[in-house]
Image (cartoon, rainbow, N blue to C red):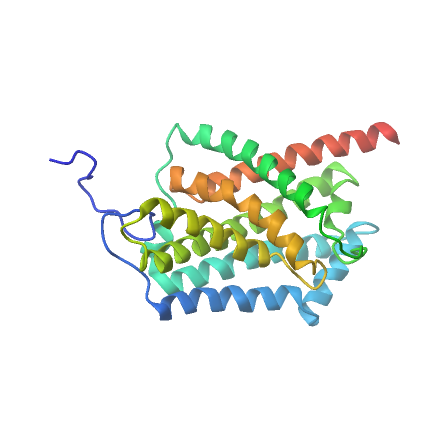
Length: 268
């Protein structure tokens, strides 16, 4: 008897599940169409992005409660739309499948992912320096600057970024699962080769999707963003819970921001 087989079948989209449940092409189109429409909604010039950009700019000067609410709602709506697309495509069972029960070992995965993310991202930054590109100043994305203005703004922007990180991790994990299913159609008998190409293709796509009108350097984004996704896929495979890498990257970026904020205050 195979002791590795659990008593209760694991529903898709758990990776390496015992059942053969897979999304159809139409169901994949449902999810990624929502992702694409959300991307266009928040990264093109339209009345909504104009309101958001104005609220972001106001954080650096005389931000009011309305501006704060707009910023926080942007993060909440972004995450809600991605979750809505996932439920539309795979139902609530598919959504539940991305969140395994918490385990004590997840603490190790959070620490390991944080360390690996820093290593792989810095490696990507080093490699991207060998690619020539024209430097442009980003005058629309001011949240990073606002984060260093005060403790209150740091808390506000940190809450916003948590929702953004959460949505991004779900999208990237779904890309990984889609590539695993697609490539698995051709390499079912070659597990190692299947995982290798799944990591490569998923990382390239995830890195390319970080390209926006403001950050339009496609090749740099593939290198930096793509390498940064490899630890995410590893952490998700081990924990089977998309919250684990989300918490890890949130804590890591928060610590970095707190350190930077403290240095700014000391220099004033």
